[in-house]
Length: 248
Image (spheres, helix red, strand yellow):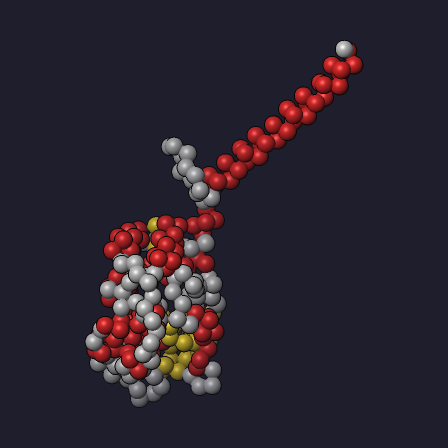
C-alpha cells in the first residue's frame, strides 16, 4: 500500500501542473485579447495602441461623419464591367472648374510642396515639386518630362469601381464631374497607383498603414456624396477601418 501511494502522488502532481499551465495560458490569452481589443473589461478601456497606429487618425468630427455616412451606403453586388471605358467619364483632366488649368495640374499644384510653374501659363503647368506621398510614406521629387509618371493622379474611388457600383446610370455630365472632382483625386506614387488599379477598400489599401484611416474616410465620403454602393466585403472592411481609427 505504501508503494502504491508513493507512485500515485507524482501523478496527481503532474495533473496539477498541467492544469496550472492551462490556466496560465488561458490568462495570457485573455490579457492578449484585451490588449488588441478583442474583448472588453467592464470599466477598463482596451488600449490596442498598435492596432490603432496601423490605420492612423482623423479629426473626430470627420470620423463620426464617416461612420454615419457608411451606415447609409447601400450594400449590393458588383455590376458587370460591360461597357466601361475611360471615355465614359469624359475628357481626361478637363477644366471643369473653369479656372483655366486642367485638373491634373490643379491637383499637382495642390498636393506638391514648393511647386514651380512653366512661365507664361498663369501658374497652370506644374514643372516640379516634392510630393510627400501618402500612399507609401516616401518623398518623391516630381519633374515634368520623362519621369512625369513617377507622380500620378489617383482616383480615390476608381472610375471602373464607380462604373460597377452605380455610375452606369449617371448622366455623362455627372460622370465628367466625378472624374474631375478634387475630393476624389490625390497625387500619389505612380507604381502604387498602378498596383491599386480599380481596387476598392476590400482589395487594396495604401502600403503606408498610418494613412489608411484617412484613406477610408475619403472613400466613404465620396461614395456617400455620389450615391455609389459598396459590396458586402468593402462595406465590412470600411467598418473595420473606421472602428480602428483614432479620433485626433
